[in-house]
Length: 253
Image 1 (cartoon, rainbow, N blue to C red):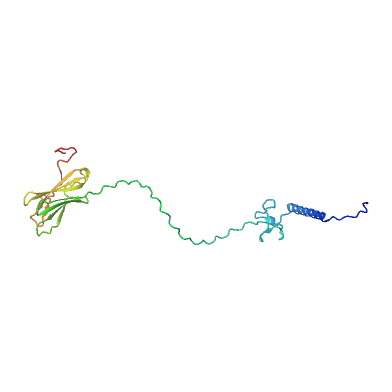
Image 2 (image 1 turned 45 degrees about the horizontal axis):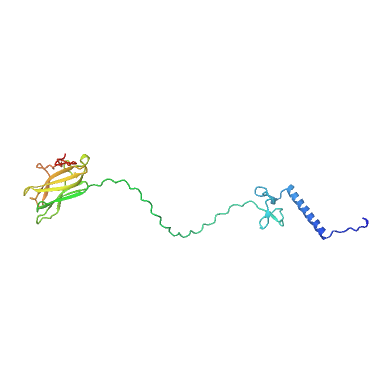
């Protein structure tokens, strides 16, 4: 059969499908080429003026209505993320919850170190003597002062103590080498029916022994103590001679 007499044969369905796909590919290639070299559309711009680089130009398939189409057409299948909006206001604080249960008591810590020893407190002491049915004697040390007391025991008397402060007497040991009184004792003796001598002794913080002498008078009612000499001057405290020393045998200093 000659070429002239051949009838032009139209392509069948498979051939037409191939041509159609080739045409679509060519059209897409032409669109992509024009997008690369052509001017940028508003959808290509981000907050910095251009889209994020990537295989699809930084765009994703559209699935939200408020996204900007790449080509500006509402039927475009891709979208690009727009610039970030301002931060919203902080929401109101929620109500405070209830307090939780108390935790378990912890273990006891180690004992701390002992503190320094405090200053020595004032010495106190008391002694008593009764050598007569008429009266009795007391000697008291308290608050750094020494007091001599007498109480009348005769019928009809009030039988209350009368006190005399011996601290102000001359040579009372008040510190230094003599030390301070720290204990007391009484020695009473009936010398006669009218003169009854009483001796008051203190031992100091330095170990010294000091003595003061008084007389108990029962001619008065009630009985009283007189610690003055014949001229009326207060009798002084006297450092006892001798003083005790270690290893003494009927001796001293």
